[in-house]
Length: 283
Image (cartoon, rainbow, N blue to C red; front, side, top):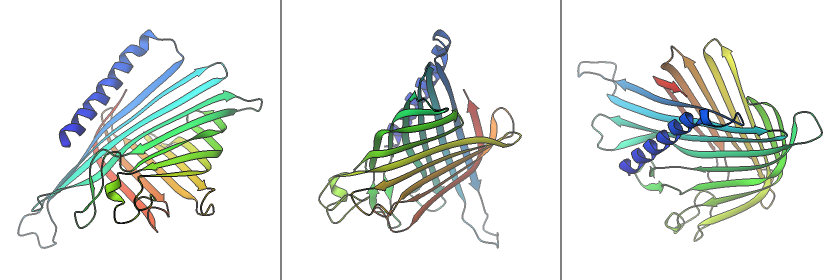
């Protein structure tokens, strides 16, 4: 599996570099930019250290790539996100995942009469690349299981590439998992014995990026979804914040925070936070 992940990372990197190289040969209809980061952290303690602690090493790879199109009254914004991280604790034979995301967002819009408003159509895909284990080392997920698809028409308010809100009052959502995860019960909202779950409801997606201080940028992404077919008052929430603090052209400190609330998957709030210092390359 690790070899497959490495191959995928290399292919994506080659694709983004190639896209960057060919951009000069195209018109200015496309705006392309991306960021690759590799964050490393390490802690070590000798036997005489009285404060306690376990030596460990961790690494996180991230790719964030935007390719946006604009011609006349038509806009088409696309964002690809790939993230993967591992942590190895001394004395533990297994490595633990610290991050695992595969996501594609696509938003098409055609200018409406009102200023900054567009008629829109959006698509969102989310999944993961590697096997997920619970605290008892039992497999609970793997590649494309779960996989989330969201799509639907709506209305887009877009000030610029750093601020937008899309409202989709008639949005579909499809959740897919392998059947071996639903043999004994429901999984990620998919009922026992099934491998898909379809929902129909309303979606609100917001994006806002700004520079807080010199060399400090903060990117915010929020997705809200209400299922008309079941408990519409229980709104699913997915909020992501990425903070990049540049030290120089290649070094930066990065903070990634994600909170998820989906009562069909788990009765509680899921929180993920990653902080690290490492290599950061923009293209």
